[in-house]
Image (cartoon, rainbow, N blue to C red; front, side):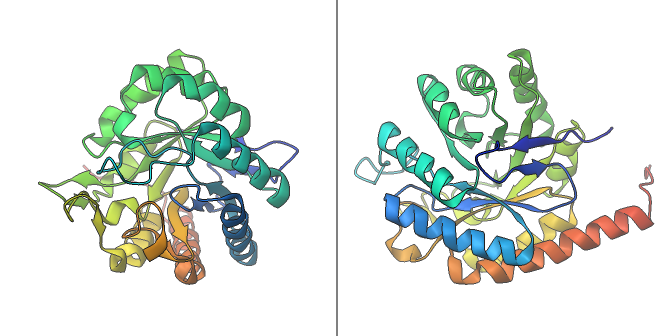
Length: 289
């Protein structure tokens, strides 16, 4: 099956093609903290991606509806958040993405964002998938921690039913017992058999959900190894949340990657992806039975 490809962005920003051989990085702070911080992070990440010849989509969210505690920072809000993302778009010149957790927020999110993200916890919700599809923007569906990779076809069918076939599927870990996520890298190939490109989320995959009582822990030391494995398994894109001071991050302080490690990890990811493509070309796929 030929892999579908699509373009994220328009003439106002640097277009990013997903599904081709070039590595695409989707990243930024978990939550939008301020305009200045968003511009700072977008500029720093873009500089690293340009150096490595990697395409870049800036990600940061205006609402965090799945926080463990009621008094945790839950976001800067729809209106202010989209205003900041719009300014990042115009000032930095890169495509932007955010998720949404209320169907009515789909339309305004799609009016600003070049790529619309469906949260993992909501990847089965018909109302969310319908709202995402009707933005007519490319959609990144995060695979739920409770979902098998082969059942993601049902989410795809819903989006297609509502007239959208620009879909990216993201692996972000699967629950194994309590407070633990693991990656089954078969998921990347299984989801790619749908014909759509696939992405690996390197920071949520090392999350230990609510393992610290009212906040999630994480095992950042495994990010480089897992990223290398995902690229060697055929991921088209890499997703990671990045911050310049993780301990002070307003969301996911125990899992966001310090930006000082970003170039190192992206460089490894690019090498692994290039080697995967070379191997794929040299040794045409043979069905093992």
